[in-house]
Image 1 (cartoon, rainbow, N blue to C red):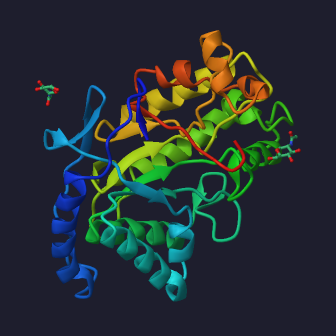
Image 2 (spheres, rainbow, N blue to C red; image 1 turned 90 degrees about the vertical axis):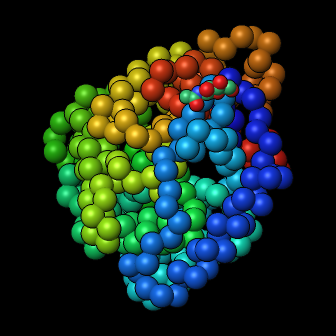
Length: 301
Ligand SMILES: *[C@@H]1O[C@H](CO)[C@@H](O)[C@H](O)[C@H]1NC(C)=O
Ligand SMILES: *[C@@H]1O[C@H](CO)[C@@H](O)[C@H](O)[C@H]1NC(C)=O
């Protein structure tokens, strides 16, 4: 992860020693039961280009496991989730990025427009508690640009079913006012969700490292980048109007777009990537966006 103005963080060293020490307190609690609390946590904040906790530097050292909520729905697969968090904690990792959405597919969180499955929400509650017990914070992603687990395509289908979809383009997720309001309904529901295991609303839970608006947003129908920019501005302000505790990021792959300085464009994996409607610098400058991300696929790019 990068800070907004592109400074890399040193990741190893002292921070992982500190992490190992409090992980070993976590060990004692692991097998006693769900109600045993892990180490107390404070919210992650930022100061300039640094992440901070209690005024001290916080180093993100983490991994992706998109499937934690999905695998926590059924009792039988929960041990996999626990084992993953346990492995991360033992390696001294501090943050796990995972999906906090599943729209309209098998074991969906949002089963149909604005209707949520309590069983799946309970699974997400459990993931958050389990992460906390292992001293791991979560970066929770809120939607998918791709079709896996529903994604923007599912919202567009719902709009058509309601008879109010304006366009068949997947990108109407970004520009159709009705679909924007559907997404806000979901945002409000998740941010204000009260965890059934600890009574804490998600917006008040420091186990959550940050929110991520969408996995790898692209708006190919508007290469100028204006559509995606407006969507980010609106959704970021909406999230912060409900939740002032958590950091917020977009979920960008990190491409330079049409308003980036021309000398940056050669850094994109190919010329075409400046036309997908995202724009690393402009998007990341939205005031409510606290930090930026780059997704790296070394074999392809
Ligand atoms: C932010 O960091 C600077 C130095 O890097 C420090 O002087 C200042 O007190 C910090 N601010 C807060 C609110 O911690
Ligand atoms: C929506 O996106 C998917 C890929 O994610 C694509 O296969 C499909 O054709 C798109 N539909 C429209 C109407 O653009």
